[in-house]
Image 1 (cartoon, rainbow over the protein chains, first blue to last red):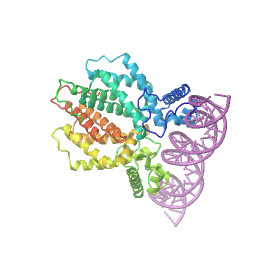
Image 2 (cartoon, chains in turn purple, red, brown, blue):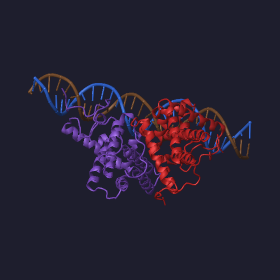
Image 3 (tube, protein in one colour):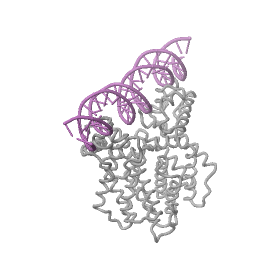
Image 4 (cartoon, chains in turn purple, brown, cyan, red):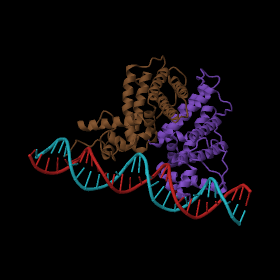
Amino acid sequence: MSAEAKTPAKAAQPAVRAAQPVTPPLTERQEARRRRILHASAQLASRGGFDAVQMREVAESSQVALGTLYRYFPSKVHLLVATMQDQLAHMHGTLRKKPPAGDTAAERVAETLMRAFRALQREPHLADAMVRALTFTDRSVSPEVDQVSRQTTVIILDAMGLDDPTPAQLSAVRVIEHTWHSALITWLSGRASIAQVKIDIETVCRLIDLTDPGQGAPLEVPR
Amino acid sequence: MSAEAKTPAKAAQPAVRAAQPVTPPLTERQEARRRRILHASAQLASRGGFDAVQMREVAESSQVALGTLYRYFPSKVHLLVATMQDQLAHMHGTLRKKPPAGDTAAERVAETLMRAFRALQREPHLADAMVRALTFTDRSVSPEVDQVSRQTTVIILDAMGLDDPTPAQLSAVRVIEHTWHSALITWLSGRASIAQVKIDIETVCRLIDLTDPGQGAPLEVPR
DNA sequence: CGGTAATCTAGAACAAGTTTCAGACTTGAT
DNA sequence: ATCAAGTCTGAAACTTGTTCTAGATTACCG
């Protein structure tokens, strides 16, 4: 009772595919379609950014019918967020190979983020597309966006070298993510220079020192 | 050589109307139209948020032709950002009347932001529309967004009670704005609770203490 | 193999932001 | 009062995201 296996993403239903390795059973051909779509998406985004990723073009580039594209990714934002997950995973792999070398956690986090930032600078249009998608998100994309956020958290905690962060440290990480995210936006929209983004990142990373056991007043604890 | 005075916003031309009190000469009727439009925008936004602000409806509600609406505000995002400027100015006025009462600058800033946050909670849909517009912005809206950012900076500096902030303090304020902005987004998209936003704000406000003259290492200085 | 249910395709249709246009209306100067 | 230039209106057109439909294809079960 089925054709090309199961539905890849049931569109209107939430709670589907929350974790990344838990890919619901996909046919080879379906997996290939999915890759083609994500590839086309990244390709188009690398050119003109968010606006250049037009669903009809993505469909055509990836040799898939428009309706199929929408079955795999229920909206343009879903598609771009998935594209971002892809890129993030790739970047995490790269970062793991060459861990940051700073002496303090704050330095290592700042270095990691700056490395990521330099990677984004090489593909500013792609960065634009992904970041715009992330922030423009409506509630229906929350699970996916949340996943991106968790992945970012993991990357930062990795850089800090922590296995078991305290609540205060988690708060600091949250604030760092906020800053990272928002600073990117100001850079992408031309309202902040690269130098300013660097300063902002370094500034916020000082928060980490505040949470270092052995330092002064610990931050308030989330209940 | 003109009809209802000058053009209210020349659409395709940048560098027009950068400062707020420098309203290019507007007829009474034009001023009235502008108000009607902004009012309709806020009204519709208060209902369904970003999506509910439909240009055709705004035009109809404010008794203005669609083309005219676009002459005043060259895009939906411009319109919503202008709406936000309006609301911000209003809020700034309110805040001035009852300044925050905390002992430290960090406390006063946190209190101010939480007050603003509570105001937004009263109109979550409006908040959604304004914040989404702010972040979805493409470069053509940068000047207006920048203006909103400057206004926010003023509000925060007010709360700190500073006339002449150091560069380090300005950096801290920038990071606070980033956090404020991004935390709002996570709240609006349902990925963070009100309590979490509060914690994030309080966490980032600790940065201010770091820049207090008399404390330890000053932050790096923007050139 | 044959049946069948789900998937995929092509293409039309719809929705909302944006643009365009012809004609009516205002304004300010003469 | 008249005129020229700019503005406003109403309506249609265009663009791109999204939905829908009918029919061809595919996967898998028995």
